[in-house]
Amino acid sequence: MGKRKPGNKYPLIIYQKKWGMLWKLTLALGAAFGFAWWHASVGRIPQILPPRDRWLFLGAAVCLAFSIFAFFAERLNYVQPYPTYFKIVTPLLRLKISYQRIQSVRPVNLNQIYPPKDAKSSIVSVLEPYYGLTSAGIEMTGYPLDEKILRIFLP
Image (cartoon, rainbow, N blue to C red; front, side, top):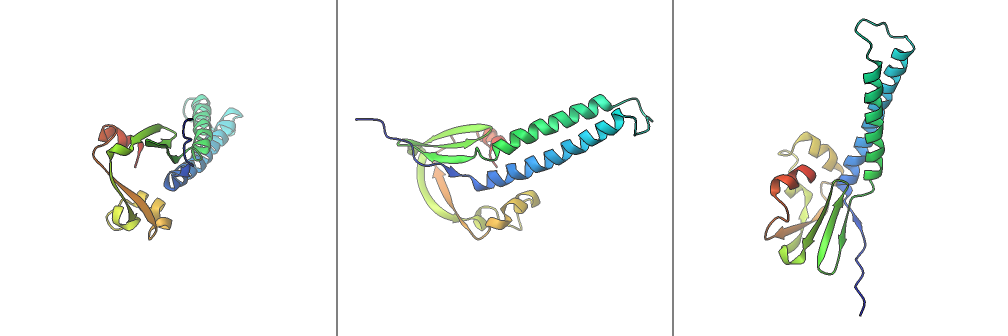
């Protein structure tokens, strides 16, 4: 008898939106740094302070590299069921959660999880198109990692 195959990959829509916003912002910031670097290197910006063109170039390179990473990271967020566990994958964290940890799974309205009047404005701006929709609420016996570590990598 062969091994059972994993299930389909289901995208984490909120993560896709956050990474999508991030790569566009860092691309714009990198382009601004690159524009300033080019103008500083050809002498179009008066040198009031010591030359900063190396720092502008470094800022542009870092922003553009992170923008490329965020562009591809936008597509690397998903949940995938397996026979004995399910896997949550983000660009910075891969987490396997055993079905034995799960107490219940129920439909939950996003308004209940993140009430618009109590949530931070940055969260509300990302979740606003999804308010009124239903998501899956999972009750577990315990966290698979320390809660502080999970809060760093997951919202």
